Length: 436
Ligand code: GUN
Ligand code: ZN
Image (cartoon, rainbow, N blue to C red; front, top):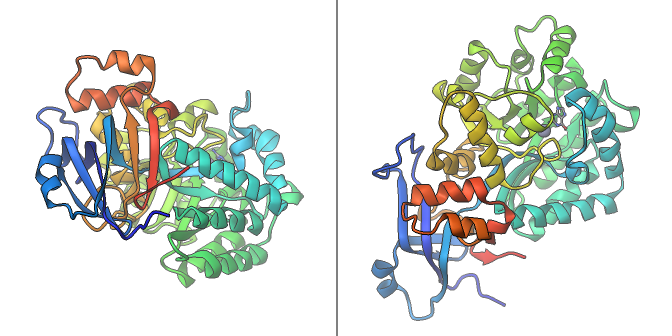
């Protein structure tokens, strides 16, 4: 067995960000740290040094094991700020938009998670798939069944992963077989918080599915949980689809907007993760920023289920924390590289450019900030947890060919993001230890 306390060093091209890099590419913005021949030193699962290999090699202790990765790029582990593990087996379901898609595919699929053995089997596959794609942290929906969350957290703890998850709360407008109540949803969520929140690297998210499937009493119960446990997360969907927005305005006529429904129930705060946020007006955006809530931008899902275009730059200009989400099974890929590819195209459709460094920020430090985890993960600052990914500049024949003669890291990264997927991920390391 590898002794994790012993120092280990990883030699490759290394890229990470100290802050939001803005749009500049050349010269490299000061927030972009790039070492063409870098060394990342890890001890006891945490970063102890990062720099040029030539500077750091002479400083290593004699017992330090060095792993070298030629023609590879090490970046921080990627962060998926919105995904549904129980929807793994319904990814790529044909032909429907949100409300019909939920009825036709989602609810019957989620029904199966009443069975703990099924939940365990899917959780294992799901986590392996995340790691194969270079995703080391995610903010994850379970189903209404507490067993689904037990299975997910147990599987995450066994792999020492930093994960956020919660049990869906939903007490109306859904099949009886998936309903809880305001009281049972509160009690089950509370028990799961007591059991899992802060256990190892795990954190709990109070997870009302979305406003249409929770009564006002249940939303109030969710708000009560946040008041009882101020450092848990809130994870939900908002303003994803126009029919959904219309429905919410009918269900909650006293609210100014869809987002306001959540605000009125005390659900907008630091550590609130709001998936989609496509149809927010200026007042909503100001509220998101003022409350410290985060938006999860889910471009593959927004395109796949025909929801709309999220205006990333407008959200950033309002000062909203934004992360990237695959939203599998609404999203059509587990790969955050592929998700960046779609984010780039959506941003083009909004008349803006998403630079490769900004895209890297979204899936690393920006995602960590969205989840208030930037003191622990998101870049290679000394002391942070050593979750990282080894990307392969030869991951496919086309990537290898396209990169011939390309020196600039901005262009090399952009090509990896546009052409890469799981084939461009060589390995994921969790606290300095290779997975899989
Ligand atoms: N809104 C409510 N539930 C869901 C879900 O499971 N997926 C997506 N994309 N949107 C939702
Ligand atoms: Zn979702």
